[in-house]
Length: 467
Ligand code: PHE
Image (cartoon, rainbow, N blue to C red; front, side, top):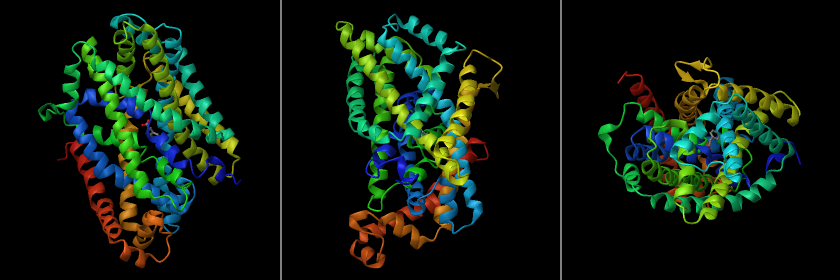
């Protein structure tokens, strides 16, 4: 098997793409973003961003990747007919995913610690104890750094050893299990006293309290959660087969991803309101809320609460791993193919860079106050710059590129290849026979030419008070 093909089986690649999308972005980042931005109103805007900008954006990256069958930088250059300038968009995506991996690993490391702590039963105590536990742990100079680096090394091992076949098979069981477990925890959380205030917070939109930055935050969250704008979808799509139906895959992944995020919200807020945790507590939100659910909601059945806690953190670690693998793969594929490095060496380059960044991000959470930028911890800063600047910028440029610079016949052909058995040849007769796909293409084309770039531009201008 060639070095390229060695990454994943063609069959499991769709599963891997869904695995990339579903991760801490849904369970950790979505609730704290919704909490900081007014709850239900944020969710309405978020869903709008997914439908209007997210799905067309995913399709664009899919088209570029599958057409070119190469790493992100080469893929953009290839589909642009060799115009090197577009390679820069690929480079931007690779840089973005490397930074994301740096701070994402810190939070994934916290999940590892919580998995261990729930195994040992050391998260048991009242709400103050749970809060204190997190603060003491996150500000410790060593432990969170070690966990973060451990997480990157685990990702590295998976990338180098190519055990994705196992991971893909495991995803088939573990992802649905995560879904079922979320439903159980939503039920438990809603049964706590005073939980309905949290449900209301999530389901009754109040646009009067929406801050001016909420549009950009919802947009950034939508892109982060779909892994959009990082060239990740483009890299994964380069392993898709010709019979993959891109339209269907993008909509299914967006639907699953959004459902999991909303369920995570329904799991966190009822419990947060019940135990008195502020919804705008930021990145610590799920860590200072959930241990209370596992103890209080299952008060009469402590063993059940204990087991559900362990299972939850284990599944969260797994979901985070399928996402970090995708981030790592973007850079590894790039270094392997562009610098002709063996895959192992390329992976080491990425692992080293991300580990240094992860250590700095981890220390900036309190152990070393001087690691801060613009008054924020480095972790916050990396999160802000990637989600609210680099991802929207990547998606903006990709959309302009696909809408205005890529040969539109090629675009239509690539988008529809795999739909209803169409194999990319004789597109006139296909479009004639399946006129609704021709219409779908026109809608998509309108979205990538006008809606996506204009909306992102307007949101940026609004954020910087130009309009
Ligand atoms: N989408 C992933 C999540 O929700 C995060 C991610 C971002 C993965 C960018 C790859 C690239 O957790």
